[in-house]
Image (cartoon, rainbow, N blue to C red; front, side):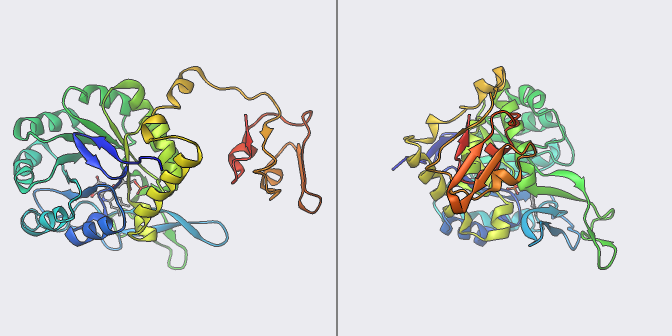
Length: 363
Ligand SMILES: Cc1cc2nc3c(=O)[nH]c(=O)nc-3n(C[C@H](O)[C@H](O)[C@H](O)COP(=O)(O)O)c2cc1C
């Protein structure tokens, strides 16, 4: 069995899946549920000097395709609606009772964090993640935190900044980077009423889930190429394969928010199990063996000579690749157990490789 435990910031996590700041980490009981659902570590909802005044409605699912399957969310949730005192007296102690490492999330100005952080450290949280989602000012906040606490500091970055440049500026002041926060602003309209689906003043919200993942993977890779800090990948983690992708881009752990909202608290254990299974099938002993595997290729590029290779044992003749081959190079006939690629027609676009659910095509 592969070892999926990780060491990060001097802490041991039983697996690399952490909660992310959001509604699925909104109080002590929610975090305890995540622990019961198999999560490796806890990151709590962002707290600040005053409770947030959250608009309603503040979440809308992003539906895809004919069956309306959901793989993303727009939100206008802001930070915690609970006062800091409630977190200190009740919510952090409940979360700490899980025995898992607990990371607090705080915002937003240097003055805010200087005031709050020592209280969090005293409450027993093991590290502090700071969010600059609405205000920027990364280095000033990191410096302010460093002056008041001893525990590790994690900077959580928005995809709206040049993450490599910000990470470089932050490197002397923080212990890790979390990337990324939600992307936006974005808009969804309820076509039955003609109104925006969210109750923020402009109707706008911030996107998370599957559509965010390629942005998050690029950000993690950009940061990994630039600094030596550990990186916590966040954005669109839904499956074990997503976790593997984040690690290959250079991540040391991941956080999960949207998948937990859509699926419930057992999502963490499911994803951790899939990570273990993938490592076992691919003969890797631990996540360290795949960390940063993609980075050398990002420096030198890759090239596909037509046609792609096919593993006929893995191919189920499902025909998905034939449907999305715009060059008409693939023929699949399930009844005849036939799979064929016409090398003269194949333009080496690579689409079939990415479409195959069975990883039967490659190069
Ligand atoms: C409803 C909702 C509320 C969130 N609240 C916070 C928050 O309080 N602080 C924060 O740093 N990020 C917050 N986030 C961002 C998530 O922590 C995470 O960075 C983002 O959703 C991408 O991960 P995902 O695709 O797994 O959801 C929130 C996300 C959602 C969907």
